[in-house]
Length: 285
Image (cartoon, rainbow, N blue to C red):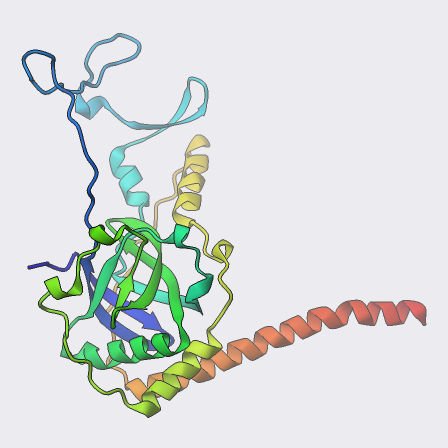
């Protein structure tokens, strides 16, 4: 029986959906070991000093980033690990984009997402229904195995999935996971209508440049700081217990907030267009 590899929360607007992630792909690469000809013994790797050719003890090895030939900024392995993003256990949806606009090259690995507990069934099915009707994929950030990733959540086969593009024989069928729901409950149409409004107001065109690799940027900043002898310690985020909210109220508030944001952005865009016209009028006068 497949077991969840990650548990967390998908948040869109003010609605949170607790989910479990199940690996949906398998690698079929052919891997080789290096062995000694004749004896068949495995070849072990040794950490040898390029200067002396002698073995180096593990405790004497640090991580180095080469600034120039022969010049390195050094870190302890624990310091590099501390720069990795904390496991927030949350996927915050930044945008809903048209599924057809997402180039498959951006997909990485596939996970089936199932509701985490009976209380998650209603918001899970609500998000699924809204995304199916609008043919949308949700774009957000997720931290898995201490690495920040860009996540694409899409409806697939009656479930939600954080999905990559793989060969067909690498995909694990949903039928192999016993804990996923078999029957979908009938969604409250009023709630679906509100969820559709949230999806509509948050809809944007697919632009990968809007989702920068912040982990790499922060790591380079740390390297630059270390080159001056200064290391900025990452702030530890505090995780609090999520409050219980009314689903319909959260959807209404999400719609209102999204409309206010859209109106503000439209106002800023109008003001930006009006400024050149105003200057031109003043000049001709």
